[in-house]
Each structure stands twice: as structure tokens, then as C-alpha cells.
Image 1 (cartoon, rainbow, N blue to C red):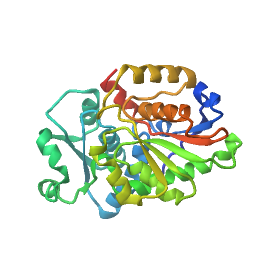
Image 2 (cartoon, rainbow, N blue to C red; image 1 turned 90 degrees about the horizontal axis):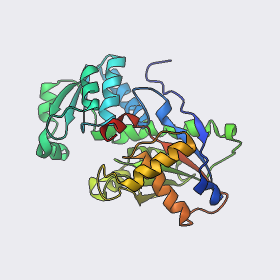
Image 3 (cartoon, rainbow, N blue to C red; image 1 turned 135 degrees about the vertical axis):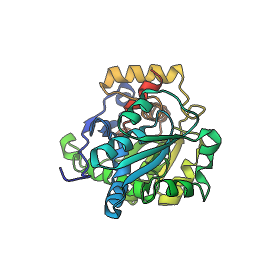
Image 4 (tube, rainbow, N blue to C red; image 1 turned 30 degrees about the vertical axis):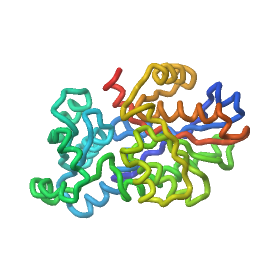
Length: 297
């Protein structure tokens, strides 16, 4: 496989009782299955950054995240696989988590910024000391966000359309996916160019900047955002965990509680509220992130 080529994610039927009762057909694009380490939407968000770093001859990659970060996990794995050094700027103070242990094992240099230092990541001069410490390195926004990340995620739409015939579908009516930074959603909106609406279940609070990021990347049309944070960032409750356990048993598909689980539960609520008419065909995007389950199981 040529360097930075994206693996094909399988498109599978998603048969759940509440979808069947509403007369809704659904399929899920399983980005969680494309790679054991550079998993889910992170592959797509990183691809254009990897290409740009290679073309610039950058010796390393540097980005930000928390101590369970799927983004940093994928970045560290990509660096090791493709020959880049990596550095991670982490929120809070040093902790020992399964993800952090993986980051170190994959060779990532870790810097703990505290909480105040991490909040400063949006300041215009934030990157200056890191450019000095790591000259020539390619800096990647938190979560792989930004236009390069969105352009990579636009390729997700192509992967879906290439497999519709396998389901006996000629077309679909809409997308549904979890949204954090909003970069993946923006990529789908850019690729669809109005052909199909994109629904984003915001798995983080509104004040984390998701709506503003989406608007800056793709404007104000072609998508709808739905609140799905369940009261806070990384907030997990018993109803959510019970829904995930039941869904995994019914669909044979693993979920995690921070993004995909919240998104699918929000979809169930919208379906039961009658938002979609019978006969609607939905594509649910499984954005991966399963390694993060170790942080709360």
C-alpha cells in the first residue's frame, strides 16, 4: 500500500429494534476497523498533515491532547510507522493511564502543560516556544482539527459511496456522526456540497468551540448540530452505559462512551421523536476511538 493511503472501511447494515420500529434503514461505516493503531477518523484527519510534513522534510510531528487522547495515540503510532519523531503536549499534570503508557512505548516525547497552560493553546503566541524547541517540526492542531484535517475527512464520503451497491442501495438520505472538534463533520459537509445533509451529535459542551469550528471550515449550510454531551465533557452516566451494552449485544459492534455511544443514543432519541420519516436511509459514521475505553472501564 502506498505511503499514507487510507485503508477501506467496511459499510455494514445496522439493524437495531428502534430503527426497525421506525421504518428507518441504517448502515454504519466502520472506521474503527481500518487499522489497529491509527484507527477511526484519526487516520483521515492525519493524512494531509502527514503528506505536508513529508513534503516539507519535517523531522517530527507535535500536537495536543488529554491523557486518554485518541488523537495523540494515533499520532504516536503514525510517527513510529512512517519515521517521524513525535511530541505530545498534554492537558493537566502527569498521570499514568493505558494511553499514556502506549504513547511512551511508541516513542512520543510527553510534555504536561497543567490546566492553565493547556487553556493557553488558543493564544497567538502559544506555539513559539515549541517551534524553538522542535525546529522544523510540523505542528498539528488539537484533535487533528483545521482545514487539513477536514480535507482528509472528505475522503470518508468517497468510501461510503463506493460501497452502496453492496447493501442494495442506490443512495442514502443523510449522515449521522459524533462531533467533538467538528473537523470530521466539516469534511463530510465539504464533500457532500449540499447533496446530503449531515447531522452532528455534539459529544462535548457548546463552549468547547465545536459550532464555531464547523462554521469556520464549511460555512452555515448543509448540516445540523444536536446537543449530545449529556451534561459535560467526557460525562458518562448509567443510562448511556446501559444503552451501549445493549447495542453492542444487538448489533455486534463495539462502541465507546465519549463519542460513538453518545452519538448513537442521540440518534435513537431523534428517531423515537419522529425526526426521520419511514423509509429514510441513514449512514452512521463509527469514528473509532475504542482504545479510549480503557480510561473508564
